[in-house]
Length: 274
Image (cartoon, rainbow, N blue to C red):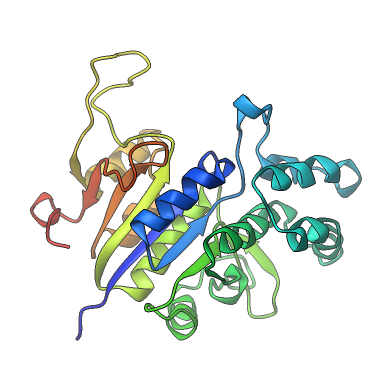
């Protein structure tokens, strides 16, 4: 079997509030696939609520103008901002989970910023009608529709069943989307998990200023951290990639371009292999 090297980069909610910084990181890393979350909190600019949470109330209580302003703030093209109300109405009438629209609009925005192709997660992430994830069909769809030689932006967090009904992963689901795509396309590679932290630390740096970065760990150890309540890396990422030669690099979006934080891999001996 030929080895296919793949690079996927996922940017979290805090990151995508800063389009200039994220775009620069994407240009530096140049991954095959970019996966994005919905915009999160950005208190410095008065954004104290995640877009996902803004989309949770019943339709009549959703502040469409506030959501439009959030996407205007990250430079969304007019096609995205003009589509916010029609998308909300359509998804509401079809009984789809509106909270996934944040990722849908975010991915279109970053495809625009980076001149990459937008691919709707509903076309490549397959759920069963009962809401369970269908890994076999998802792999087939990803391999059929994503060419490793091209460059794409994909929304995290959601997918669809064979009837087109939208389903979502648990919170933090964009991490899961990125790992699924990396595994489906590559036998070896790198999954950049970009957020507002450097990676795993020896202690809580807010409590202990002498805490140091853990430069490398296994997926098994990262899973133990997650099971103990550490939210830096979704436990499903460890389960999806834990038996592969695809490493996860925790990156701080706001650090140096192309920075490298904790490297998580199948074994410490394979950290530098790929």
